[in-house]
Amino acid sequence: MKTSTARPWLRLSLPLAVNVVLGFPAVVPAFLLWYLASNWPLASLGWTDREPTENDGVLPWVMVATPILALFGLVWWLANRPLRRRTDLSPRAYWLLSGAATATPTLTLILISLGRN
Image: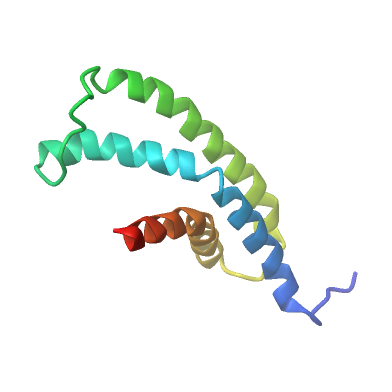
């Protein structure tokens, strides 16, 4: 079987596109992680301020966030596993690139919100 080496960028563009598309729904798990971290462990350390109307405790947020994070992680892994086998990148480089591509929409929204202030 002959392998195509004419366009190696094509083998990398599909995983990049898939991970950027997966990055749009990843905004929700990223927000949930930030909300949990900023209201409980980081606020306990004094690094952030707690949300003043948050008086239910951490349990409801953990009950909401855990299935969402697990579902997104499973979808992300299932989408990337077959794509990883088709690239010529090392596993470390592939997963780093996939994580960065998935985080791109969230980081873009953060930069836009910082630019408004």
